[in-house]
Length: 388
Image (cartoon, rainbow, N blue to C red; front, side, top):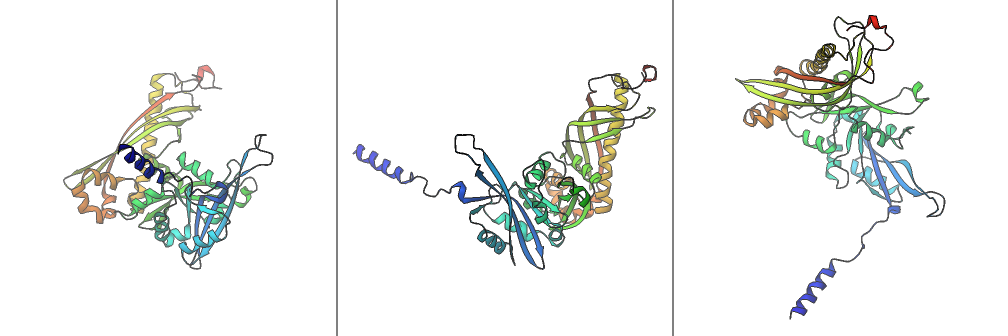
């Protein structure tokens, strides 16, 4: 009896071991790594940057290497879903979105509203939720068609820029979470390209400015200076430079960010919303153009105090632009209040864009300069002129 039961169990298990009946060979797949979405005359256009691995010339086992070819293909129709179907019809391989790293919306779509595009990407089972989102100046198609010198594709360039936090960073998953929740604000980095004269040197795309969204529409834009201040407040900064000019000291020093951490500490007292931006940052000196001997702890303290003031000024400038001019909270204040004071937030959520400009903000900043470089005294300065 036991033998019969055992045999039946083995037979049932074998039903689930049917081999690779549904396998798809790599040579039959078109791997999409970048998507561009444009709209012209009411018609949607999907541009797909496709990386196709091929075997280079030479027999296997004799030094043949995998080679990646990047091509851009398009599908255009009245809806995004139809455009995707047309894109597939123009390709001899099955489209696979699971490797999508970057999604680019044109500025025109951003101004009209990205809701349809986001809905399509979020609803489709294949696009990666952690794909980085960008807004392009001009057509998104043209960004994907750029051939950068250092990386194999524009998609790879933008992915690396996001990883290095050269601009505001946002993924499809984060955007889907922000759009339907009050205060309905989000920030997306803008891609720009070199001028025609500069393109003769190298084709390249970079991020500097930031698009501000309320609901699904782009309503304003932040320049590079404000964007960097926003990154500091959002704890979204990895690399930054400061030119420090200490008082009563000739010349300046250049310091580079080593590491930092910013935490927002909300308070709600007697109907007043308050926020403390608490930042700890460590820097290295990479150039000393002053007469200060920064190996002296007293002189180093002077530099740290000035750097602290400069950092607060940078963050406060960005805050004032958002509070007084744009009146849009993309600093994460809403999320912190929602988490800390859910009852009060529930009442204030619908009016947050009117409340945000009135939030009292203070700064608690601690600066440390860890390294001064491989030399002590400023180079090229006579010893008797060095301030000790």
